[in-house]
Length: 256
Image 1 (cartoon, helix red, strand yellow):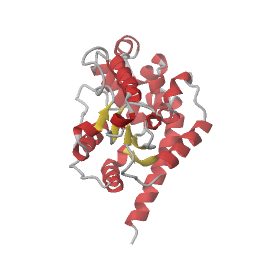
Image 2 (cartoon, rainbow, N blue to C red; image 1 turned 60 degrees about the vertical axis):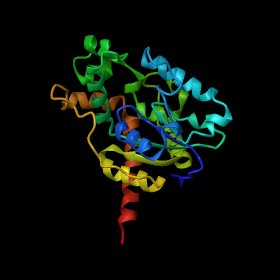
Image 3 (cartoon, helix red, strand yellow; image 1 turned 45 degrees about the horizontal axis):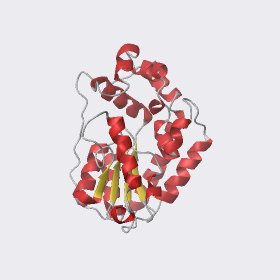
C-alpha cells in the first residue's frame, strides 16, 4: 500500500455492509462539511429512489469544474474503484473488507428490513433463507461483491458467476498502487487505529452501529454457509490475503 499524501483527496470506497457508519464519522470528524462529497447526498435530488439520487450525485461529481474539485478533500460512499479519475490530483483510497459469510448475512438482514431496497420484494417472495437469497436472486451484489468493487465501475458488465481468479491480482495490484489502508472488519478497532495513524487523523471511540435486532437471522446452517461461499469464493481469497497482510503489518508494528 502507499503512503498518505495529504495534498491529495482521499476516497472511502465503501463496500456495502462493511463498517460504513464509523468511517463516515471519522471523515466528518477530520474534515469540514464543505470538504466532503457524500455520494447519494451531495449534488443529488432530495427525494426519489436512492439509486437515482446516487447516480445523479456521481454525475454531478464528474461535472464539477476544477476550482470546485480542488476544494474537495474527501469523497465517501458506495462507489467502486475509479473515482480518482475525476481528480487531477490523483486521489488515494481507503476501504474495509469483511468475511464474505458475515457480509452476506448482514446484507440479507438489511434488505429484509428495508422495504425500499430493490431486492426487498424478491427476498420476501423467493428467499426464506440466506442460502435461497444467494442461490435464487442471483444478484451481482451477492456474487464476489467485494472483488467487483475493486474491478471498477464496469464490474456490472461481468455476468453473475463470471469473475475469475486472475481478477484477484488486478484487485491486489490496485491495493498496492492506490490504497493507503484496507481495514478488516473482524479486526475493526485495530483497523481504525491504523487508518487514523496513517492519515494523521483524530480518532473516536468505537461503537457498534446498526446492531442486528433479535428478529434478524444471526446463525447459518452448513448448507447456507456453503451457498454463500460457492458464489463468493473469490471474495474469500481476496479477504484472506488482505487479512494476512494486515496481521503481518500488525506484528511488525508491535515487534520490539
